[in-house]
Image (cartoon, rainbow, N blue to C red; front, side, top):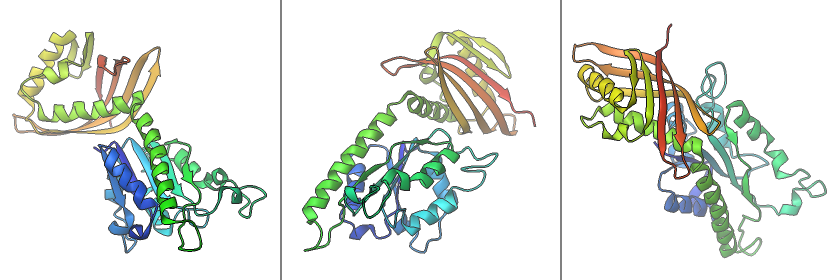
Length: 315
C-alpha cells in the first residue's frame, strides 16, 4: 500500500525542465510513493481503469502533477480523470472509494503571476481557474488541499528564463509539496488508516504468536464478535485461538468504506470488510461484515484499541 500516489500528467515528461525535477525529488525523498507516468503507461490514451483505481484506493494522499495547459490540465490527464473517476467509484450511490483521501493539485505555470489577475492578460486568478477540479474533489468526497503552483516555469533559450532558473524554481516547488505531504501523512486519520491496513495484513496470515495484535489492545479491551463477547487481552487470546483453529492462514480481508471521526479525544472507526477464507472443515467463506472500533491515539502516536465490534451484513 503506497501512502502517496502521484499521477504525472505531463504528455512528454522527458522534455520537461520542471516537472521532471519535481518528480525526481519526490521519488528521492518520500519512502512510500508511487509515481504513475501517464505518458509512459498510456501513450495511446487507452487508460487501464482498474489499475488506476486500485492505485488510488491504496493511497492516503493523491497528487496530480502537471504543466498548466490552456487554463487546465493536459489532454492525457483529462482523459485519465474522465475514465478513472467513474460512476460508483468516485461518485454515485456507491461512489465513495476516494472518500477521505487528501487531494493535491501540483502544477507548473509558464506565465508570470501578474498575468493571472483581473487586470492581467489572463484576467482570472489561478484558484478561480481550478474550480472545476476543486469541485471534482468535493464530489468524490476527497479532502481538497490548497493547490501548489509556481509561475515562470517555462524555458525557451534566448527568450524566456534560463534552464538553471526554472530548475531552481522546480526544486523550491518540490520542497513546498514535500512539506505539505509530510504534514498530511502525520495526520491522525492517515496514521489510523495505515494501522488498520497493517492489522488486517497480519490477520490474513494468522501467525501462531498473537503478540502483534495484543500490543495494540487497551487494558479494558472489549470485543463483540458473531461468536460472542470477549473481554480484555485474555478474551482476545481466546477468540484468536478459535480463529486459528477455524480458518486456514493466507485468508483475505478487503477493507471498504473506512471512516474515521474524532470525539472527546477518542477515534471512532466505521468500515466494511470482506472476508475471503478457507476453513479447516473444507468450507470457502466469502462474508461481508460491518466493523466499528473505538481507539486512543496519544501524542507519541501509540494506538490502543478499546472496543472492537463486528456485525455480518444482512442482505
